[in-house]
Length: 558
Image (cartoon, rainbow, N blue to C red; front, side, top):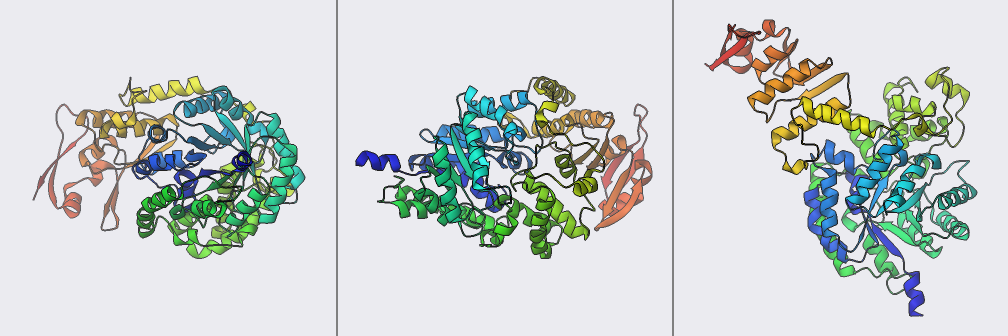
């Protein structure tokens, strides 16, 4: 009897270190906030900790000025007993486009090498052609390949559809299968039916992942458990609820003493929750955690937008001073989704559909503005849509262009070696040769600045927008970097407070003063003593030195 109880225990994946804060506050937890609690979480008895992937990689680089690889390594050092899990967007990896197979393979290899045990792999369209490469690489490097069904509701997404999809994933070698209910729309009794039917046809463990956006999450988890689910995703209480996952402590307490008892230490869960409470308060006070993300929205079953996208969409509308359009955008989302063949609303499709809905509402005309990503989707560059897109909609979005029906990655040549060459070239341009394998924590402020410039250059943009590009650089590197940018053949738009550098390296200058534009034009006509006196209250002299190509400013305070 004891053995039977052990076998029927429900395992818990804790999501607070990834999806919990991604869904509530756009992935803003810092590594410094995460690391102190990892060892205690490691002792609690979780099956796994979801710590990486999704938006964590992008947010660490773009907003937190952190190295996402270093975050993973540091968590691994502290989590010695619990599996570490990540979310991977199939052929998209952690981005929004398809990468060549060799890039997918290398990324998976590095993820496992740096500490990941379980990789949850999904494709936004449930197109298994787009997850095969990542799954094979995961198994090749000794990882656990968990293939995810993106759950959605449409005329085509039936129980039979999901059973066939799960069987196909199992036949591909999945070590487990996840039901990924990214929008929190899996109704409890529907979950019971789905899990029961899946259990009839597959023999690998099944995990359920849902959100509490519509207030359904805890009930969905419980009915899934009754149907025989093996693993359930939850989040510790301060980072649970709303657009996040249902609460860990509540489920553990509910199952305590039953045949499903998780065995997780409730005392440690309490301590973990207490640790995160002041952190949650800090982000609430800052406005990063929008209280609306904690609210229950039953109508989300209609809109089907995932929690992470909801929080990001709120931020976008706030930035445009259009928060009053929130409900209009929510109503537009299912309309856009139907137009596009009922794609599941998960990254990147959720962002794409959400952005198109925002454009439709803010412009007052549907499809007046169409993002490039939507056009590429209709062209077949993301895979096969669940339902064929109407000819009328194709015409509106891509005109008479031909639609590609194959695996998108088949159009891509291997690119790892070429990218490596481009990276080395970019590092050479900013005089950082030999720094390729240097940890970012070992770089000075000036070196990090030059790495950031190199990262921008390697993407080959036609326009570079730079905010104080010479900050933290010594004189030599200031002059060298601006020279490289000037000679790069691309348009450079920069804010810069070094007026002498502005005069020497830029073709046009705009001088701002008291919230408006004072003057604009060639540096020698704009950076003149009278203008500088008005703006900075300094005495300036323009001098042409015999050895210098350009005039220079000599400035002294009045």
